[in-house]
Amino acid sequence: MSLTLHFHPLASFCWKALIALYENGTPFTPNLVDLGNPAERAALLKLWPIGKFPVLQDDTRGEVVPESSIIVEYLDRHYPGPTRFIPDDAGRALRTRLRDRFYDLYVHLPMQKIMLDRLRPEGSKDPHGAEEARAQLRTSYAIIEQQMTDGGWAAGGDFSLADCAAAPSLFYGSMVVPFGDGQKKLAAYFERLKTRPSFARVLKEAEPYFNMVPKER
Ligand SMILES: N[C@@H](CCC(=O)N[C@@H](CS)C(=O)NCC(=O)O)C(=O)O
Image (cartoon, rainbow, N blue to C red; front, side):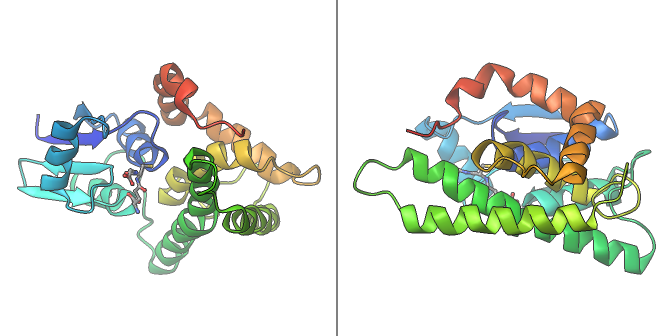
C-alpha cells in the first residue's frame, strides 16, 4: 500500500486527514505515533522537522505531505473518490479554502490554546490568552450561525475540505466553549457532522483515548 498516515487517533488536526481518507475509502496504512516515545517522535521529525501531525507519506509518488489542509487537497488531486473536497468552480474553491482557513485559524487554534493551557503547570498558565481564545470562539460561533443554512455544509455546497476542518474544531471547541442557546443552526450542523459516517468512524476510533483529553481543573 502506498499511502501511510502518521497520526494519533485523539489529535484533532489528524481527524481532518482521517475524515478525508474515510470519506472515499482510500486505502492507507495507519501509523500511530506516540509523541511521548523518543524514537517515534524522532521518526516523525525526520519526515517533517516541525514535528506536528498528521503527515501523509506517499511511497508511489515519493512525496511526504504535512499540513492537514494540504493533505486533504493532495488526496483530492491524486487519489480522488466520490467525495470531492475542493469544487472545480474557481469561486467555490476559493470559498471552500477560506472556510477551511476560518475553521483552522479561528475555531481550531483557539480551542487548542484553551486545551493546552489546561496542561500547563500551575504558575505557568496563561489565563489572559485562554480568555482571549474563549472570546474568539464565541465570535466564530456567531459567524457560523449566520452563515449556516438549514441542512447545509460548511462552504455552502457539498461536503468539502471545510467540513473536514469544521468537524474536529467544533467537536473539541464545544467541549471548551459550549454553543450558545440561540445557535440552533450551528448545533444542528454539528449533529449532521457527527452522523456523517466518515466522522462517526473517527469518533468511534478515538473513544478509547478520550480519557486523555485535558480536563478543566
Ligand atoms: N497546521 C497543522 C497543525 C497540526 C497540529 O497542531 N497537530 C497537533 C496535533 S492536533 C500536534 O502535532 N501536536 C503535537 C505538538 O505540537 O508537539 C495542520 O493543519 O496539520
